[in-house]
Image 1 (cartoon, rainbow, N blue to C red):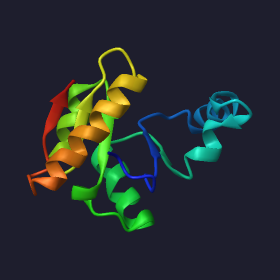
Image 2 (image 1 turned 120 degrees about the vertical axis):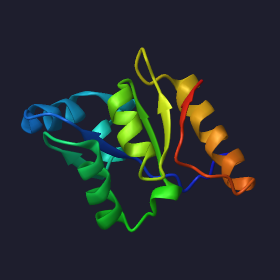
Image 3 (image 1 turned 90 degrees about the vertical axis):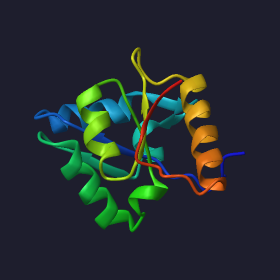
Image 4 (image 1 turned 180 degrees about the horizontal axis):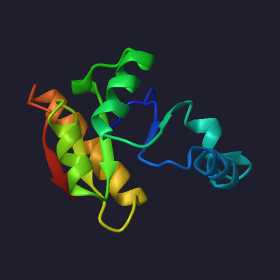
Length: 122
């Protein structure tokens, strides 16, 4: 099963960072808990997802092969997978089923010492 030490981050390609930060405060991850509280690592700026993940790696110390990325856009998924990050396609947004499926796929690949730089569609 997925680890209880899972950490989450936001990597958003936008030039409206202040609006994105406001939205993280408005949406709830659980009753009384906003997304900003559970997403301590945030890279929100225009530009390449590659740059977002380079900064996340520097900030967190987490290696690319120990990360998982969920997104709806193929360009972003491919950029990040090239770094060695497991990427999961979410064509209609991130759902609980895709989140859990991605974590299970990640755990299985790790258990088999498989290359993580790929894109999955669940």
